[in-house]
Image (tube, rainbow, N blue to C red; front, top):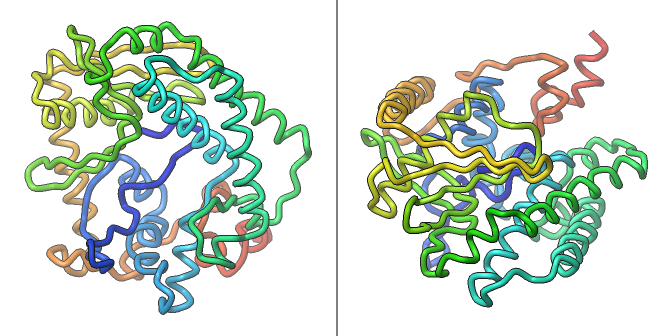
Length: 331
């Protein structure tokens, strides 16, 4: 449930047993996975297959490079992710104390994280030390940005945090007993016809009338295509918290524009979503060498060579042998 400016840790991140052994790479469907495939099948392969295992010290160089590339974010994604994490920090504080931290403390919390993560990316700490930290595409491509561009991003984020803290929605949330706060930046999984589905819930609470699933946004309002994603959240809510679909409401909250769009997902929406999930999963699995083992080969996933698409792709160096500007811009 990431906003246009950000996406934090993925449910596809490496999962380990209590003994520290990495589990196998299992198939699941999510809107982000399907969107990655639709934009470029090769990008999808790199993100979910080619990079798998690259966190291990003994990973081969190409797998390691793909995994490092997968950890990257654009500056817009990163700032949005920081806003999401600041909201989560505020809500966890509120759950225990009955009120949010003062606004100045939230902004100070955001500023500290922004400075530390910017330095970590600039100094390439993930690659140098193995510590899990931010990698910005702009640093990887050695893009020089003017100081006012970073200041504009910062001002936009601060506006979003202030809007969040002062919103009528947060006032509603604080009036609800904290035991009814059901999720704060939580990953969840459910199944549709044996297809595992991954979702990330920004926030969910039950006000006694409705079970509200909240999606923070920090960019333009999502298109109608987002109904698929919203329906996924609603289906998850019915299964995770055992409520009828009629009680579930999805709230798309634009923190920059200070707008709230409330949607009631209908049974017809749910049925259409289930149909689309099964169809999408069937298509993705059709590209696999062995669907049962979730094994794939790079050659099975065609490469889309488009300057517009590739210049935004984190895998451009590994895929093209250089940056999109260097390779495709010269054609």
